[in-house]
Length: 315
Length: 256
Ligand SMILES: Nc1ncnc2c1ncn2[C@@H]1O[C@H](COP(=O)(O)OP(=O)(O)OP(=O)(O)O)[C@@H](O)[C@H]1O
Ligand SMILES: [Mg+2]
Image (cartoon, rainbow over all chains, first blue to last red; front, side, top):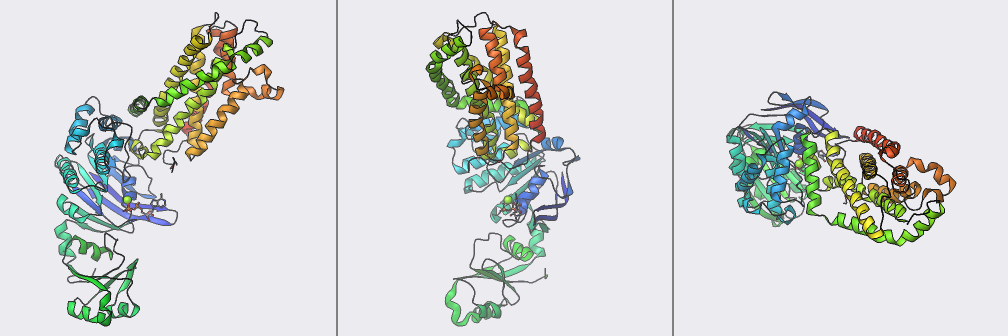
């Protein structure tokens, strides 16, 4: 359904995409995983025809997005990263408008109700969007991309600010669309969601696709264990040396090699008081991400030392 | 075409959901009109229209002046889409620039037409303005020509400016400068010579000339065709320039 190949895009001297590919089949859900600034939004914007790539090609079904954007637009629904709804219109009016904009006739009316129900907005149809809670507004934002039953649906962090129930509703609505044959691209920073969606995964970092596959494939491929030390402050230089840690971000470190917990702890010696917690990482999506990119996905931990090693393959 | 109609409808709906802007824009000129009625009566009489009451200047004058503010809203509505982050969603429909600009412009042409007509009607109630044998169709033609001209001019400015502040400065100061030069504040022949010379570069001048033809010279449709022709012709040229200049992917700044 979607074939995007060799996408390159620079903003001045920032290389946002450096030859990235993305393929999604009809009925498939692909989760695009990447840190802040990895290039996810840039990629979706290019596919949606909102941004011209420096090079590369995009087609949806048999339609070339760059050559025939109008035909491509009919096949595509996008809920951008920034919530974009009309605060002064009601939920129903928002949904009907985006349906009409996408070319729906009278069917936009029942369809608006249907989509609102799917995303738990059924009782709020006649409420002004400005009077919705943050999570409700986000759901409306997503719903507006679904109204016209797009063949390719792209959701850029749809669950930002959503609670657990909202996430589940959203996941269900997305699955339903996929079961109906739509191709779905879904970006998120939230790994449990990816597991719940049972989505295929594309890991993107620094504008390049670093890995792709099903969750099982990726976990099997990057059999990685790790130990994470959370510390107070920054890592003293001598410890950095004895652990073989390299700095990979704002006070985040990574070391490959020895994974023996006792020996690792021993190296902290009299500095052990800076340790706040020690956590063993089992192979899961998070360690896959770490193995593939060298970074943690949620980069909030400024005081994290991840010491890890790849058992099977050195990648 | 789908996009143009959908956007037009939703913009009209937004105005229906919040009509206070138009209510204020209708009430204010009604307050101003009586203030200058008497003075304008004297000045029209001095210009040789012995039976003039002043309403023939002050009603069209305020309509032309405030029309620039009302029509200026079209630019505001485009910038507002950037503030609401809905602009990219409109763009994702792959509607061409013509449809996007048309979708925003068309509702304001309609609103300006209705708003001007309503003010003329109110002016006849409040100030006793009458057509004095002038043709109502000629009057409508002038209202349409002015609406087209103002909306297309503001769309060109919208295509040009990057921030809503630039637009609002142009709209506020432009209304006074263009309106004043065009003879909307005081009759044209009371302006200094240099101002009378450059007056025809303003849409207000052509609108006021047409209104004077209808209200003071018993003008019919044929009499105002030249003025209408200028306004409509300028509107077409400026709209084409606006469409040509407009960059749909430019990031515009609404209020930060
Ligand atoms: N308009 C722009 N001008 C300049 N640089 C930009 C612009 N948009 C994005 N970038 C840069 O391009 C890179 C990729 O940005 P992008 O928005 O695609 O990342 P992302 O993966 O969506 O990140 P996030 O998770 O934070 O949304 C970043 O380095 C970003 O700073
Ligand atoms: Mg993003």
